[in-house]
Amino acid sequence: MGDADEVIRTEGLTKVYPGGNRAVDGLDLSVRRGEIFGLLGPNGAGKTTTAGMLTTRVIPTGGKAWVDGIDVVARPVAAKQVIGVVPQTNTLDRSLTVWENLYFHGRFFGMSARTAKSEATARLEQFRLADRGPEPVASLSGGMAQRLMVARAIMHRPATLFLDEPTAGLDPQSRLALWEVLGELHRDGQTILLTTHYMEEADQLCDRLAIIDRGTLLALGTPDELKATTGADTVVTVMASGADLDALTDVLAVVPGVTQALRVDQSVVVSVEGVSGIVPQLFAAAEHRGIGITDVSVAEPSLETVFINLTGKDLRE
Image (cartoon, rainbow, N blue to C red):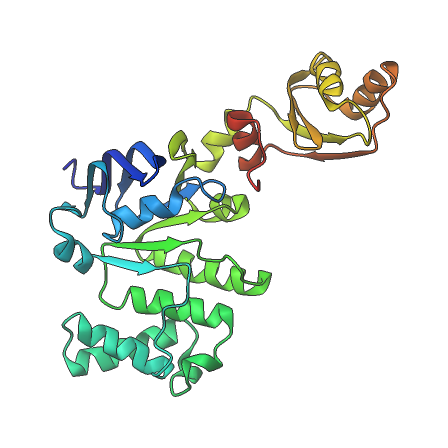
């Protein structure tokens, strides 16, 4: 494998499911020790399959993958010792208390009873669940259960923590609480790989991220580096009911200052650089062609903009 600072590496990683569905297609990745690395893409992009291959749950069709220097296909048992996994679904043992879920996980990974007890108690404190220790798992809210799964996943101090869509289904308050916990783990040096289709989550949490779609790597870099590739300082989303949106796209594309105009579903996304007061100019251009704009929103370039530029579609599709 590569240098000592590299904790995850893939070379040509590929997964083809029966029927010819190529979920992951020749993926080359390198994740550095201590960083939060994100796989960002829409549902069905291949994010979960990639995480599954790296955590030994999915066997690759081709290519290679290493975690902490261990070939995950050739040595799956050894690989499981150095990873922590938080899946999308709740896998907590409902027959155990909150504290017992951590204690028995520690014992499973070879901790002595004494160490497992102290670690379980320490993790409950760390994840703000100390008062819930004696309670049944079923009493936890969705956000608390997710925090408990993260606590359990790091009990054995894995080289890498894998989180698959960690905040899917959580309310905004629970999402922020989990982000705070992950930020603390990051500051303590924990390497984290997460999959997400939330652009705000990737932007907020990730040191670097890979944008993937249809199993293919489209872009790789820090959030700021990726947003800089848009070549725009303003993004205007335009809607026009009942209008020919393809015609509107052509009209807006030639307005001075517009670097790109793309039709995305029932709107036109316009990238603008170096021009102030662009909205009246867009209205005027559309009106000149007899097209009435019904709604406009203005924002700075985001990871959503990057994805739209790369694929011509919305990240949420």
